[in-house]
Amino acid sequence: MDVCYHLLLVFLLAGFCSIGKWSADAFESRLVPGKPLNVSKNDTDVKKAVQTATYSFNNRTNDAYFFKASAIEDAQRQIVKGIKYLLKVEISRTVCRKRESDVDLANCAFQPHGLLQQTFLCNFEVWAIPWLKIMKTTFCLCLPLDKS
Image 1: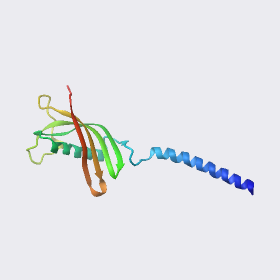
Image 2: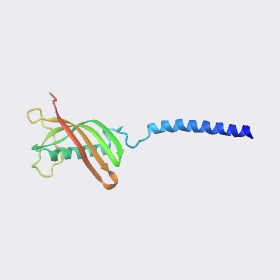
Image 3: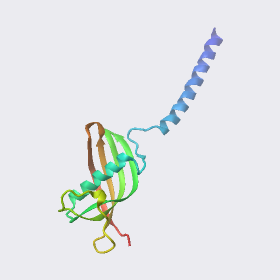
């Protein structure tokens, strides 16, 4: 009986050790709350977050023209009380004026090379709470980008 007990104990310990290793590997590859992970720049939700951030930028500036994203440099998603998008985006001035009504930024061309052309490299944080249909920009830092 004593031998059976020890064999059973050995098998149980061996099983726990192998389960521990397996779950550690699985843990690394899973979505971990709080850890920012890279996400495709073509992801639909990333594009919505970029639009939200650009909208916020346009509302905060006194520029006569709208800006829109010209390139998404980096995109990460972090699971918090909702989803936080950490974005590095180039935004450029368009030919569409803010005083125009019903402007569709998707159809606004970028300013041609010249005095009015301007591009910023922006770091945005956009917080989304999908179940409440909320998405808002919580951080915005934009610096002029010299594209010459």
